[in-house]
Amino acid sequence: MQTKNIFRAFLFFALVSMILATNAVYASAGDTLAPKPRTPTPTAMQTPTPGPSTIGNIIPMPVSVTSAGGSFVLPITADIYVEPGTAELTSIGQYLADKLNPSTGYGMQVLSTTGAPGNGNIYLTTVGGDSTLGDEGYELTVTSNLVTVVAYQPAGLFRAIQTIRQMLPAAIESATLQPGPWQMATGTVRDYPRFLWRGSMLDVARHFFSVADVKRYIDLMAYYKLNVFHFHLSDDQGWRIMINSWPNLALYGGGTQVGGTCSNCYYTQAEYSDIVAYAQSRYITLVPEIDMPGHTNAALASYAELNCNGVAPARYTGTNVGFSSLCISAPITYTFVDDVIRELAALTPGTYMHVGGDEASSTTLADYVSFVSQVQTIVQSYGKQMIGWEEIAQINGLSANSVAQHWNTTDSFAPMAVQKGARVLMSPANKAYLDMKYSHRTRLGQTWAGLINTQTGYEWDPGTIVSGVSGSSVLGVEAPLWTETIVTMADIEYMTYPRLPGYAELGWSPVTGRNWNEYKVRLGSHGPRLTAMGVNFYRDPLVPWP
Ligand code: TNX
Image (tube, rainbow, N blue to C red; front, top):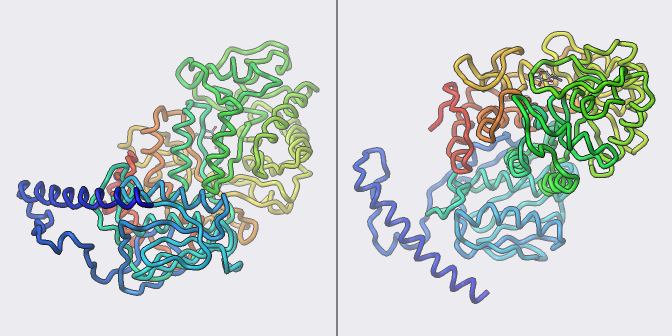
């Protein structure tokens, strides 16, 4: 504690010098829009007393916000108190500390407490949490003295942390020391999600992305309270996860991507588990996808016996779809599926296994139905539930706990899934596909499902988009990023931001009162936040960026 206080005293003088230096720059720049230089009087060295303020600009829009009109300023002495002081709550507190410490330089620590801590701190507790707010709900109260979050479950505390970050100035997201002051408007936020499943999919098969890139994708999702990361691990162009019983899938099938060869382009099981744990620590469930029976050229190329004619095709690095199929009549096909699902299920704590099932145009309908029915049995034999692209709704024995992911833009198999008692995840390609171009002028992306600017991506409702599929039949919303044209992390960020915050809002916020003209201003205010996080977002001209 002693060392920390000495450190904080030094930091205080460092910050004051920074503020003075910043003002000097503004003064010499001669920009009339820049803030007036603050006179370096002794009062400038005290904590500034901010004026009244309101809580605003949170994405996704919370269920209820009540502003009290005052301000809380995070003091240099602030710490984060958790109750009860379990390992789980301590790591949630540490996540917040790790987000706030680089920019504030405050060296906030995570401490355990019983009851509210003293003034000037952040207090995260599950004691007395309101069960009616659900697992992800929370109540955040900011007074001029204290920031308090009460949640029924730890996940709710984690979601609330994102609200706290968004209530602080944008510079809080900077990785380097910033001057502050670190002010929040006072009031209360009571909040919980509309849908259970608020997801995003990343295709690492068409182009491969490093573990670090995948983690960054997940961490950015967390900022917008998303809770499912769908990991598209196999396709015609590459197989990305080591399966110990079929090693050539990764060793050979992981050697290509769109455009050519790719060296060691797969995740080891340890790397996969590391990604699972990383997502879990952000209260994000990882759903792995092995796309079958189509989209399987990488597997067919790796093992000749998976082909009906016993001949392995060459690996594929183009972008066509619909030409490959597993051999539906061969018993070894089901040994293969069983082995892959068994190994993946053992590494995956989440409930769902995604089995693809889309665009199987080289498989007859009878074969398709027979295959997916057997795959459903295999998935369930490992204690998991099946999710697949909407075509899987065609199988007769579709289980009520299986999920069909709607992606088509006109006709849909979603009502068929609902008739069979199953639920639907909404990813209509003309609304929710992150790989569609924003406009004809944007370089990256495709156009087959249409152009999706930020407004088009926002103005629809997962609860009514497919007629006959509503209410509890709608599990949630997911935005997939296919990567045929996406090569780098900068490309990923460009396609994902600023559209993903909109999908997060469709998944979380109440539908009533939602409107683009209000949202676009709120989204614009996130521009400086995304900039502070180093996100290469598309400055959609429809959004009033400050
Ligand atoms: C269709 S939609 C696909 C993917 C492509 C995507 C490109 C769906 C389930 N399959 O294989 O990557 O279009 O936009």
